[in-house]
Picture 1 (cartoon, rainbow over the protein chains, first blue to last red):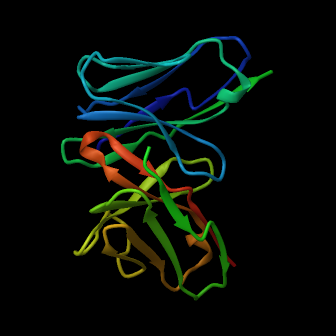
Picture 2: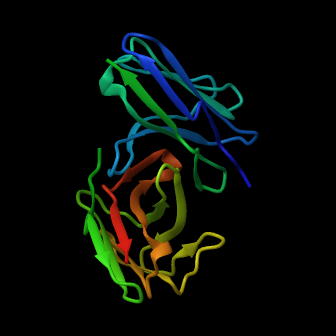
Length: 110
Length: 115
């Protein structure tokens, strides 16, 4: 069974600090997505990375796909309280199945 | 991004009754939709893949006779939880899109509480 391990599971930091969330697997994924989910709502897609080594930026968020397409990271610069939420990575494997990580719950303190 | 809606957003039912949840793609046609279940503070678990005009594909451990899926049109998939029990209480989320292109859009979710 393919697994996506996310770390850390929970992170609480002060506003203005930087942070990185990791998503790791021993398997290759054809694409990987990052989502953010608010309580009681469905996940909202932030980005999709497809090419090994790919880096995408979304304002203060930087997403990177590992060269071997087995891992990814999300880096947030100068975190703000509005960044608080559950961040999920999801990988699409070669069988077109979407597998979710367990999520990283991020809390930014004002 | 594309819009996916779910109805109802929240439902409370008694044990033993059945509940139907609708998932609609509002601005695109979806030949494939996905149903997920999410327990509190946990991630999304794929339950089944809903295929328009054919039978759904269920993940291992998901009872197909308990979670009936119908995908009768390109914009609507329904999930019916039959003979619901308290342990079926969960947040059910559908998605639609083209996952092999990394395009998957989620509905807002339906919170089911079985008393």
